[in-house]
Length: 399
Image (cartoon, rainbow, N blue to C red; front, side, top):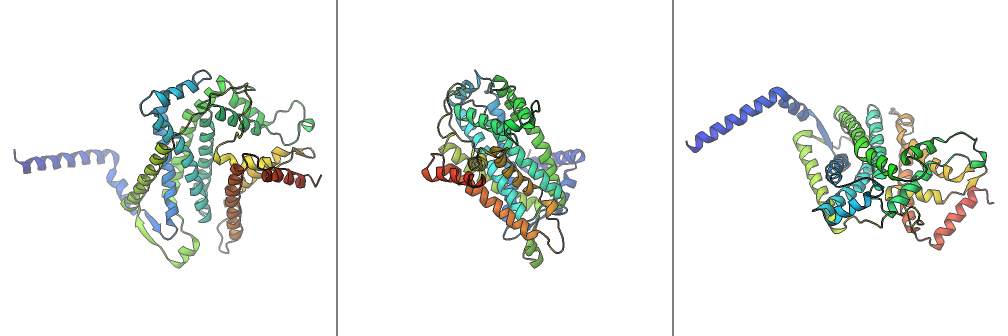
């Protein structure tokens, strides 16, 4: 049989296979639909890639999480030992855990960047309100995934950081002596459900594990599907000034933008690989519930801003719990940010537009400043101690 005949048969076989798949999956119709979708390209279009990068980190989390789950054993007596075995005896165990842990942190960072860039482009205005709200839910789920996964290795920092986080959730609006007897605060009920009791025990690990790698990934995937569908329906937002000046062009989503997205994924994967190899994710001493908390205990970086804000609050302001004031301030600011489609709707006059932009700048700067300040003050510098004492004095009315 000649080479030409073999090539002809191979082409016929490939065409037959394509036709069979197309009859069942309608590949040509989907490809034609994708080719009609376009993406605007302008001086701010670099921010569009962070949505895809966030998706890429979620895929990394899913793949590495399934590999880690083959060796992880949830339980007070088994969690720490199984992670140690994974790091020291399982081939490529250390690199898989580093990939998983670093990808989790980079995913939070990329989702935050994606959210703020969408905010400043006003991607929350009509008809993209559902896109914005689904994205806000994805940010909440991303942070919750990080919080639930943090405890699973059962080392001392994870144990005490989780304990502090659940204690904050229990903070009542008013101090105990004014709180009605027999009335449970919803935060206390939620914390008890997560812990499985009053303390962090074997049941706590099992509940955090089931939430982390069974419940939340499915919920996340569902909301992510809705988010991607909304983006496909309404497309990418173009900043108002650029849209009015027509200083942009459009490229086909497939294959042009898809190829660019894949290139961004490749660069991101290389960055992740370098970080994971050069700075492998460590494991502290095993958690000891009886031992005192180690000095300098703190949560992950994405919780450091509210962690620092709580230090600026007095124990109480009259009957109001000081910690609750800090939680309410940070929570209220976040709710106002996520509810922006309601108070900055799309209007011809652009009502509240500048206020929304200034508020976003204020929120972003505040988040960065308080995060940096929290790390700088971990060793209780005299300046930090003075700040943490001075501001509560003002809040109490110079008392």
